[in-house]
Image (cartoon, rainbow, N blue to C red; front, side, top):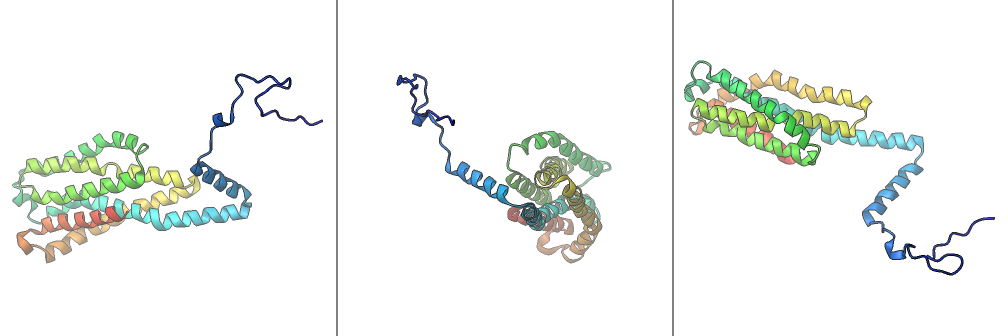
Length: 244
């Protein structure tokens, strides 16, 4: 014989239980939770073939939108970091009165800033939305890279390089973390390789870009070619950071 559930808050003898929960004590389900439950039920009703097709559609959207944006930002991450090496082919050393060892010190200081920010950045990215954190970092490093043109001494260059290393540090580990949240282990390796190709492409074309800027923009508005290189690449990466 089936048992009838007693929900009235009273025992079978008619005496009311003191600790019986009332209707107002039952936790309510919010509209957002109702939507999540409905989505879960919808996915549960899908067959195996429909589920695989849904996964493929999600991966295609990620490959079309998220991965290209990370790829572009990573490419500009290297270009902005490597501008100082290309600037030496112009009048960079003369304009900043760099002495022996000043350039190598600037490169080393950028690496120090990069290393200092790695651990705090990796801890912070798990607490801040990557869709906000990574573009914000990219926009800041774009502005700082462009501000290299105002440097007039080795000390100013070192300060800019140190801060640049700090704000550039979040991108690659942050991009890898973001992709690991969306791609499966089988899909992840290929996407990391595609992301890394942005660095390879930047290495291949950074010299050609610098040569073109030095040839066509060395002198307009009283600015040397190396200054235009920092301004143009900083503006371009800042634009993509805003649209990311």
